[in-house]
Length: 178
Image 1 (cartoon, rainbow, N blue to C red):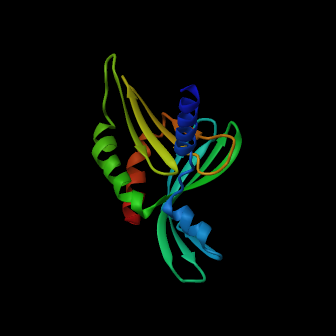
Image 2: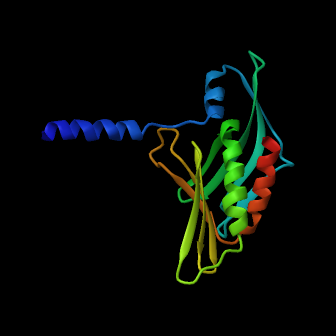
């Protein structure tokens, strides 16, 4: 019986720890020659007090052999502990849900205040998790890169309390990709 339980838990651990890549990353990985066009005029940026940052901007990915094109959202994150720069992508298939989440759950609650309570609103994409947390008068935006490669660090995390008011700009960027 113990052996059967061990096999079951081992199997479920392997099954649920599999890397989940965005459709954009899969498209890039499958193309032999790729071009990525970035629009640097259309960007939502969040910075922390210790000079960490996250940039969101639309991209167009082109498979140069087949000519196929994919639009997506690119997220560039620089954090200091550890000192690392990472990129993640949110595919077109996830953008509509991301827009809906921000419009329905975050924007209406940007001015939310509590007494002795808190609320957290969480959106999970394949390569990124965004969290908006409200505790009394404090608000925090957390952006976490989900593990999509064999990096020993499974989740790189950025958070800020001073940049929460920039969330509507992120919504603008997302709507341009749709």
